Amino acid sequence: MTLSSAPGKVYLFGEHAVVYGEPAVPCAIERRARVGVQRRDDGKLRVRADDLSLDGFTVEYDGTTEDGPDIDVSKSLVSAAMGYVDGAIEQVREVTGEDDAGFDVTIESDIPLGAGLGSSAAVVVAAIDAATRELGVTLETAELAERAYQTESRVQDGQASRADTFCSATGGAVRVEGEDCRTLEAPDLPIVIGFDGGAGDTGQLVAGVRELRAEYDFAADTVEAIGDVVRNGEDALADGDIEEIGRLMDFNHGLLSALGVSSRSLDTMVWAARDAGAYGAKLTGAGGGGCIVALDPTPETETALSFTPGCEEAFRAELADEGVARLE
Ligand code: PMV
Image 1: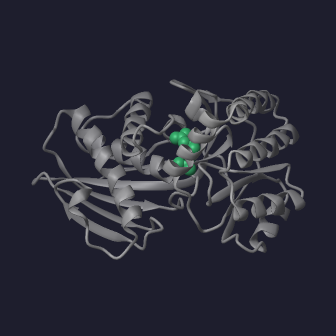
Image 2: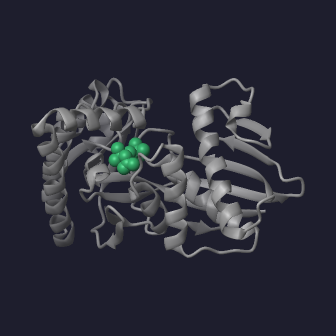
């Protein structure tokens, strides 16, 4: 068996605007998806997923998700998760030239699904890495990131930026602007995450912003303003100025909220963090529900969030310096 892991991420700045060519700065965190892969002789794909916030399921099939695994969890979540694994394996067959390769795939993840922490990107990065290595091919990080992006892009009907997949493959804080992806120097950030237990529909939220942007010039200006916040955020990161990074995160949340992608629970958690003295707080990822990210070196924000109605889980997250990790 070959085993790889890859980290999830938070967006310090720039989600949604990155879809329209503005820069974004995601940052990898020490919450990982681990994917184990074993080659099969019969060309079939068998996937077992535990802890995917999905109750655990096992599926055996040789086609695509349309065959419909018959299991007792939300169909859309399962087909989403299966779609990503399918897409990853398709990339593996393409890059290795082994069109008929079959696999047993085991997924374990401590990244909540669809909550803005990059769970799908982490699964795709780890799956491609483990399955290619299982066939004797080790991809360079840049190619791994690109293949993972192609997978996400196909599963999400072309509505994906390179941010999640590049960040998960390389680790650390990164800057993504269109096809230009690079690693950034970042200070040690005191990251606290609040999770409302829910998930937003990325496709729908991205479509909502697209419509607003087409209808109102001021919405298009808001997207551009997010780009300006990101550029200021890069300077603050380079200076190691955590106070300024926090202030800009607050601003970024306000602009995302104006674009309609926040929610009551996300706003409540953001305000709980601010009231607790965090340097700043914002939603992370597509929004609609899921997670917020705050900066606070003291225990106050984590404690405040854990007592906030609507916050299901609050935890501190270390920055993950390592992206994909080759475990076995
Ligand atoms: O919620 P997530 O982690 O899938 O993040 C989505 C981020 C968007 O900018 C809204 C879309 C994208 O692909 O960049």
